View 1 (spheres, helix red, strand yellow):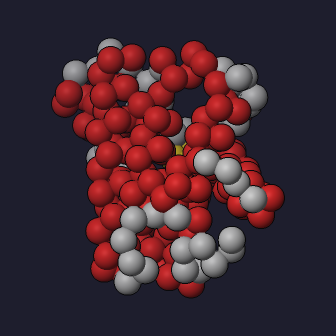
View 2 (cartoon, rainbow, N blue to C red; view 1 turned 135 degrees about the vertical axis):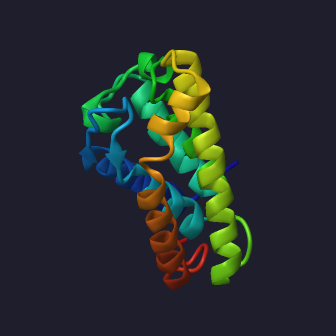
View 3 (cartoon, rainbow, N blue to C red; view 1 turned 180 degrees about the vertical axis):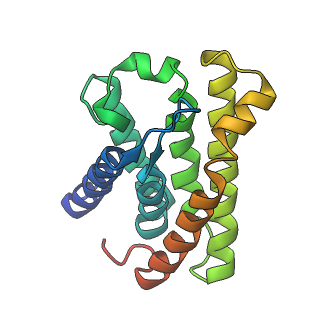
Length: 172
């Protein structure tokens, strides 16, 4: 995949916005997963840039974290984060961004794909909580999805609204 300078720039911009979203976090005393704005920027990346560049922006974000840059929530980084309780959520940004770039820019269609992306993110996240966090399925659901559902649904609605204002590839 050969990218133009403009495509590389906007892809990098959305990776940077995801980093900004990781620094806006609220730790929860009952969960190893903090509340962040990463998901909002992940959805916006896919929805505004399209599925391929949105996905690529998240690959870039995860790569930066994997090589040790402090780009994940609370300024963490390194490959070890992927093998911790939040690793599944981080990997879930990939299908979430890709799915956010699917479908027409109609509100209901975009909403469907954003909700589908959220489902994939949650599935990936609770899998990580079970495997790397040592939680059972009930604990993973109660600490990894339920507390986040209202805020994440708000992020889905907000992203859907913003994406409609910036149709896919308008920045490119």
